[in-house]
View 1 (cartoon, rainbow, N blue to C red):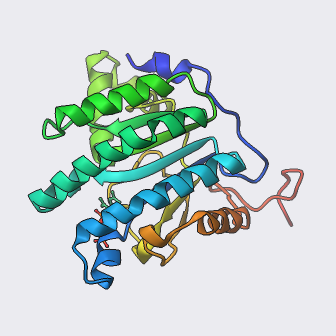
View 2 (view 1 turned 120 degrees about the horizontal axis):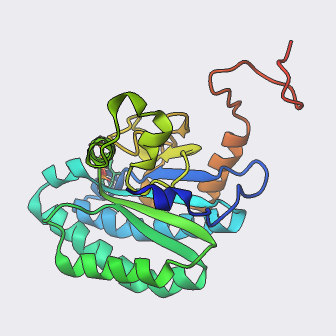
View 3 (view 1 turned 180 degrees about the vertical axis):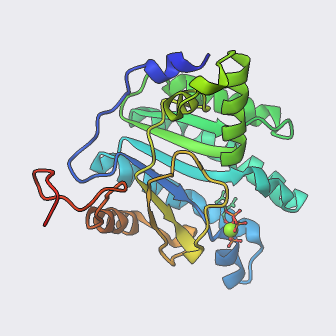
Length: 255
Ligand code: IPE
Ligand code: IPE
Ligand code: MG
């Protein structure tokens, strides 16, 4: 039963007022960035590294407790073998290169997904090393969604409930959430998808149920800390109702 991880105290609080607790980025537009420069798509992926570090630093510095980055989807295996191989190699290089910095910043790193046997074992080992190194950190939780699919996670939760012998009639949403992979991850407050595409693309389907969404047109390799901070500013102006009616500062319905 995965419930033990859900019961564990969360490593960070809600963060400063007005700052979303959990921000997730769909890092999109690398291929177009390269194509605009008449370069192979892989150059766009390589250029994305700078943005990743910039966004991690920006999120941490303003007190975001949970940052999730969508790096590779279960559907991305459909890309040409050479591009997939490049991405596997790039992620390994980035993990090895930035492990000391991430650890020094007190960031807890986790990878969500990672079940496909096509993932190179040496990459799996380096990722395990990074997760072990940073497991006790409490500064910010960085979740890299890699070989991730929201539907697969939902199926995994259903399997886990069945394995645990939970009677069908007793299954609740809370219980379902507890059986998801990385069940201690809070719901996403804000999703930023760069490059102007307006799709979920099978990303954290359960966790984004009530997220606010922003679709900046800028391509991921051009996205920088000020763009990220601008997104947080826009988020603050959103009114989150969760199905209820608008309320005043005391939580009473506004007339
Ligand atoms: C996002 O950029 C990176 C991954 C999906 C791995 P894309 O490679 O999807 O870039 P575009 O959408 O083709 O521009
Ligand atoms: C979503 O982007 C996956 C990642 C950013 C890792 P895609 O570029 O793969 O999504 P689609 O194909 O446009 O939906
Ligand atoms: Mg894309």
